[in-house]
Image 1 (cartoon, rainbow, N blue to C red):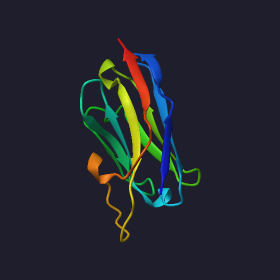
Image 2: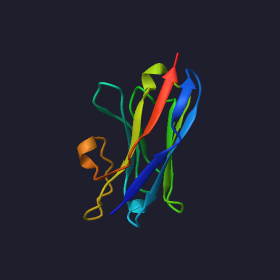
Image 3: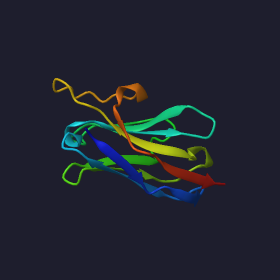
Length: 128
């Protein structure tokens, strides 16, 4: 079992930066891929970024590539999402997610349904 808690959201202006953190408890976090998803007001959940278990492989949605950077520190059981050059369309609740790892599966899913553990979310609001 993994428990996740996001932090770092807030209200910023367009062009500003924020750093979201995902603190995890549970010894299987270090072998799980970690993903960030977001849900804007009135919209569905959208994939943002993901990272594999050892941090060597990362994935980004086209809308954030070049502006956002995902990272993880397994020694500290944390993952982060550095968000630069924020735009009003980045306004959303941001969630980090992890999954059960079965049979040494090292894949990194990019879809919500593949993840088993979720944090409560942190709100990011970007004003124009």
